[in-house]
Picture 1: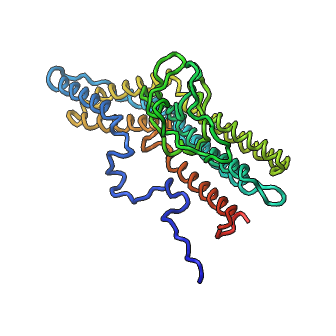
Picture 2: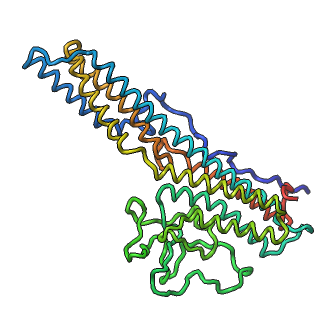
Picture 3: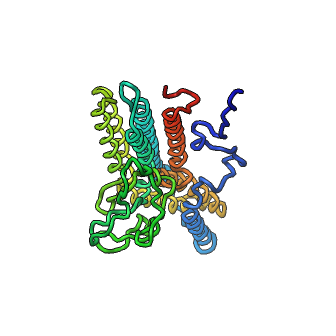
Length: 390
């Protein structure tokens, strides 16, 4: 009797990064979910009200308060140049961030692939401890993706930060049995009464409660905490980023693989290059996150936009009368909308609709690498069906 066919799950490559459902409304009719109308509503409303005041004064109290319309082309050139610079700079940050995320994902794929294929001796045999070591590092590679995502979003203290500044305490993660007899990974969210859970405020070096970048207490992140090695303690309260800390574990694995004869010199060198490329890409993403546009440019841009839309009613009030309100509202909507798009793209690593879909992209990479890992484990247990790692 032939074995049953394997059941396929309803997924496919890049399933989470792609848009899943068709648009219900044409984009021209959309005023939410990705639009910038909430950003520009206040300035458009204020300039419209200002135009109402100008038209009212012009029609009721004075003969004419208009100015020559020839001033408008001169100001529009300046406004156009500044908006083009702002949007092109913001989109370049968005595109660079997306390319860096691709570089990181590619490095994780390559390192996981090479590790799984080559993590065995010339006779093809490995010990249980060596297989656990390889599985641990593949999971760490996936955790690097999540650590980078959370650091770029200023979501720190995952896992718990170091408690080095506190009096000596029993280590809740201490190994009580040999490594080979314990599971390689634990869920850090399960804690004893004496152990601070992921939702419990932890003390920093100054004795105050650790907070995220938005002054909220960090919460647990179940999607990747279980990927971290047992007993791992972060040192973010001392300035060490978790992505760099995890890459040190990967570097140590490369060294052990070289010593075991799994990776020859050129291959180990290539893997180190992949790891360096990952760190370099993360550094460039950090640069985007921590380097806003110069404040002088932002101030002048806001002032020029306000100046232009405040001067415009005086130039058109005699020709358009009350229609000037609609004209100014349309112009303000257009110009401030372009400026609002630049604001959205300036920091592309958050949760906004216009940000990079980091959650979906990372989930797709995790899905791929975890399938490879499960097939690799099945191959070593003698129950592989596809022979992927034979």
